Amino acid sequence: MVKRVRERGAAFVERMWRGEAGVAGSVLNAVLIPGEVAFRVASSVRNAAFTRGMREVVRAPVPVVSVGNIAIGGAGKTPFSAFLARRLSTVGHRPALLHGGYADDEPALHRQLNPDIPVYVGRDRAASARAAAAEGATVLVLDDGFQHRRLARDIDLVLVAAETWTPTPRLLPRGPWREPPAALRRASAVVVTYRTSIDPHPVRAEVQRIAGSAPVWIARMLPERWVRPAAAIGEAREEPEAGARRPARGAYSRVPASAPEGPILVLAAVARPELFIDGARAAGARVTDVLTFRDHHAYTHEDVARIRSRAAGRPIVTTAKDWVKLAGLLPADEVWVLEQDVVLTDGEEELDRMLATLRRHDA
Image (cartoon, rainbow, N blue to C red; front, side, top):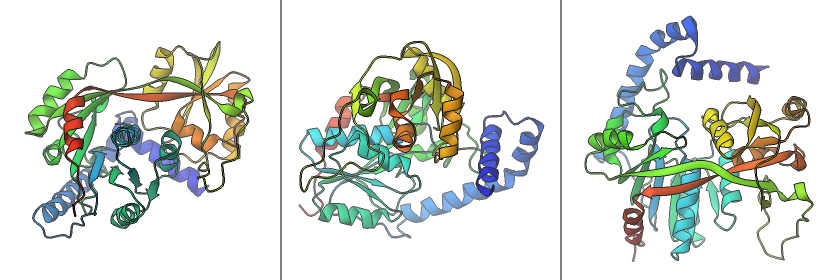
């Protein structure tokens, strides 16, 4: 009961942020103005303390690349961090991913997308960085690290979602923004991400005026790769060899597939489910029903019973982030997973030049 009340309250706040909560939302919006002012001041004081050396900054023995944003959810930090880790791996690095541990689904998704790249989970990112370096990592990718200033970073990449960009945002708790746009001046580079047919270039121009000397790139992040969990087509899982790393809980074998035929149910518990729904349609799915939960929702057996009843035999299309939580709860032969591709359409050469400068700090 407590969990349900908490989730309903959080859902109401999110509707208020989007301007969809009616008169009650307008009242709450006004009530939260002092809270927003206090948050803005506290954030400014904290950042100034780090900038002026008044708070300790810990440097890891190996380079750190941070991927973050200035708003809550929806910009694509986890898929972009995974994309960056793969890119570092292909040029000879041994990357490790550091996650703050505030949500179980994102570390599980990292392990799914890059099973050969270790993931370290913990609120103390400096401790995770030391552990990863001691175990052989040559570079660290910090997922959601822009506000985690205690751990020094060599490259600070900040993502901005084109669909939700505004130069005059409302900060927490009155809105979903963690910092004002001026914070982008701390970035090594800003990446404008987009997941719909929106033209990202006008947003890029606005962001560039704010970001100062930081370059601004563009990344297309579209759900467009269909896969089936291997169990859905009868592929046997092999036991790992002695000493090999076993798949993480929620990991699944992926088999390329095409869009499901006939009407489908879209299931999503992500920050911007409407973007995934649009992506499913664009990828060839015939969407006739939608069931959404809050971002990071922990699925229960009760949820699964509701999902299967709602689907009524139709294929269920979900995200990779959702399936790592649903594997073992929902029959795989009822599911299609629509994975997201990350394509840096502008700034690829600049990114590679940045990554080429990474060196051990004791070298």
